[in-house]
Length: 117
Image 1 (cartoon, rainbow, N blue to C red):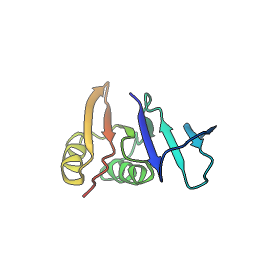
Image 2: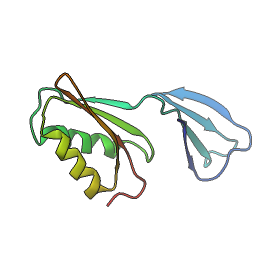
Image 3: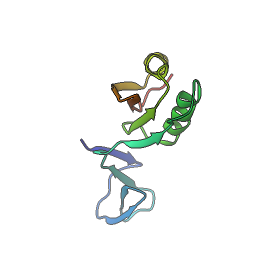
Image 4: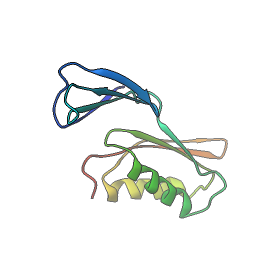
């Protein structure tokens, strides 16, 4: 899966800069910046060992740093986090893509929405 984020127009001819897991294409005009996000791998967040409400709070803080369309993978050992993330996704507008329980480690995949309430 690949996401594309565009700010202020389209590049005409571009230079590629790679950094922080992002690929930036700078056009001839400094006002035109295009960022291609290769989001095959979600952004990981390890909250194992933290109890409610900390996994959800840490996830919310991390989602605020991501751009729309990016996926956050939260790993938690708090069994209550399953319901917490379901309610959070419903109330916030983010998309809960999947939840799994792997030997007591609960994994939650959240896709940041562009229309967050």
